[in-house]
Image 1: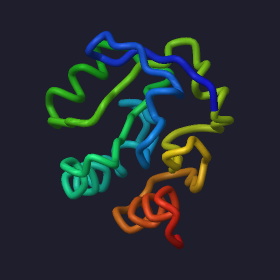
Image 2: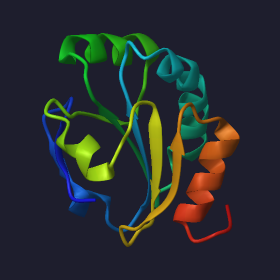
Image 3: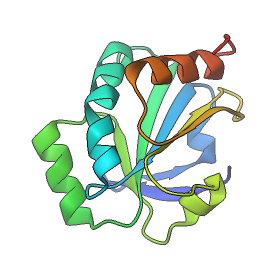
Length: 136
């Protein structure tokens, strides 16, 4: 999907920035109870793959304030890229229906996996395998 968001570090992130790597995109916000339930799985999964040069994970925040997100990230120590989607344009481009929602994107930009609701580490591993061209 074509999108444009700004990371907490002030960088603009677009579809082109996903190219060449298997990517997990997770839509979430701080007040969403299922997002809070999913958070430990995201952290464990990311820790396992953080040093893989052919992998990236992006959290896109919808319907939340930057201050709440910055506090969440600081308190939890989330190290992956976090971006704000204040107008919901990225959420619309991906066709989201709520949060959390997770998408697996192949290195050539195709959506290869999707999950509505909280993902487990096993779910995330399956989606990553699909994004890399393996079986889910």
